Image (tube, rainbow, N blue to C red; front, side, top):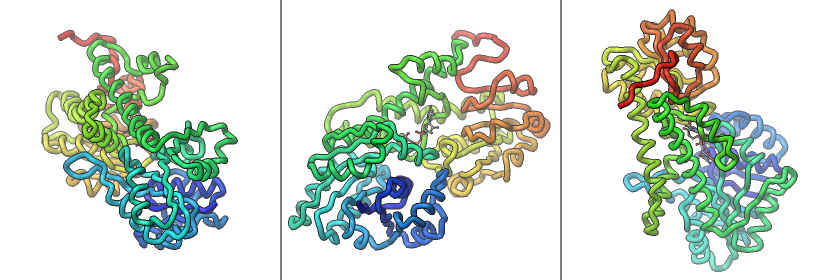
Length: 444
Ligand code: UDX
């Protein structure tokens, strides 16, 4: 079976390489010639653990190719996956479908035999059917069918998520579409992965509802963490205690500075626009979006409070600026709000991130960047942990304390054991955990 994957961004490149690993013949297409040339040289456009080896192995095996010629790839393909970006449209929160319909235009212009076109990009409910109408109109001479096959890949563990998913969702309305997708995902039968066949709109909505639910789960535990601080409870234990209830589950209950990334912020907004359009409000999701926005500001207050009420003239050392570890992605990272706010309050902000600094330099002007975690600590008044990269867990706390002007840590990801940090001589503030001396906060 041959497939064409349009778009070699995060989703397209990972999905293309993984389908090749499943044994399919895959051609990945991107109109950015420079990007294609770099991938062919083995340089990945994104940082994703294991991706370079996966691409190299499948290219060497002759199952994975790259091209800028969409026509060549599409004409030969049984299925064409659209995996281009659907960013938030400026101003109104709707998903921008310019690239999706641009790809559809190109496909319609060159397809020469019955073909299945699959939306892998996250597209608003109703888009795949609109594409079907579009193809019927543009190519009445050919049976072009459509399907919706949303992805659930987490950055940093995208390959594992593709190869061992919790489920695969296929929105199909014809036998042929169903057969082709069943065949594409056949290797997953071996590990008994549930493959759900649904209607087009259902598949599209499953994607948005999943991401919005997960964003809600995170936002819920974040608010519970705030309450924990007030009542003297420990959010880690609360998360465990509720997560062990099988109906709730333990994942995505890690309190932090608010969710970010390329999906949750964009998809929650897009779902709200759909809800508005159909006059079917989603108050829970509206609240999630608002609470998450406010949370980033709240984190600024937490840092200034830890510094005695003001960071003016203080040196703030920030470890981690990406929206989560194991990625170089800066999209919608809480750091993009928190760091400029600290600067605006007069702080000298220094930062280090294992993978995100190249991009962050552009997005965070005025920040002083370090070569390694210790490179930003000399004379610092507070150390802020913003992203839970593993390498920060093993920091030599004695060395950190000796370097800092004030031994003070604000840990927005709860990576440290409070007792250990306090024993090492720091004042320590984390998320949703009681003061280490056991004192209860005052009631208001
Ligand atoms: C997410 C979805 O998980 C994935 O299925 C979808 O296809 C794309 O969006 P990703 O954006 O890569 O993946 O990151 P994820 O690991 O889900 O984390 C998103 C954000 O939530 C990060 O900012 C992370 O720090 C935050 N988060 C996650 C928490 O604050 N607490 C948690 O318990 C989990």
